[in-house]
Image 1 (cartoon, one colour):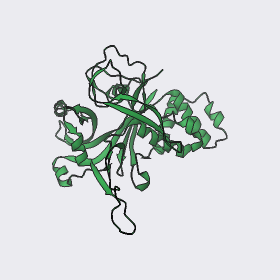
Image 2 (cartoon, one colour):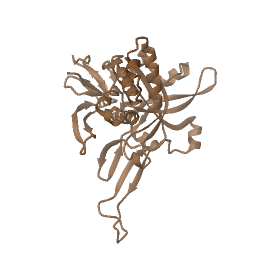
Image 3 (cartoon, helix red, strand yellow):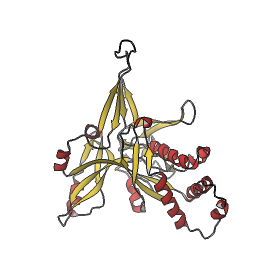
Image 4 (cartoon, one colour):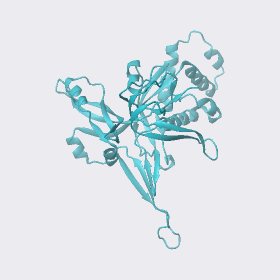
Length: 346
């Protein structure tokens, strides 16, 4: 099985449906796996044709949740400034949902000391910097006044910080927002994707090409990497994509090492890998045996291929960012990553 790390640069405001409080339609502050799955599957179907929708649904299921990342200017041991991508992973802090900064690609002593400080960004602070609100209402045609009970507030995540640029410069921070996550492909899924690609190209020699014995596994992976880089160069997520919302541009797609997978709570085969006293990055099916600090959420997945969307499945999950205290004998070996959730495979 091969795992890719995807880094998207946000180009437009995005709205990830969360909850509605009266007239306020809140946005989630991270991208759930099923939301990114839908966006990637849709882009893939645009390339190969929507007649293959049932076959394509399963191809991108092994995908994590996507979390925000910001650029950070740092000074290394040689007193040179460099820019690294700082991922913001979820973690509850004093009972409130927050993001913990995770600094990558810099192993200087100074940054090890910085990491030990465990700097957190609260959900409210993240929203203050990156989330704005659009207020709208319907009008009475004759009176040109606001229609009763039509006031609506719509939250969206901005591509860049709202804070003053000079202030950001003084803090040595850059204000662009990125989104980071992983996606995995088993060998069978890779063969299926290659088959769909060849069929969509109407290649007369498709069957001959598929059955060539000298095609190495590495060549298939290389072809897949190039193809994914092309079709995922731009994806659209969340609500109101027809009104200038939701565009993400692919900044980088790279094969992720096995050692890095544990940070996302997954093994190379896609099963759950969560130690006691650790933070979960994916939703975990709730069990009375599991002792944890955090929240329980009711998650419902809808099928939007029907004229009227219907609930496909629903269940209670331990929220991302929760700290697993003790499993008390609960076994994870049958829990597979499916669209940002660890689900027990029957």
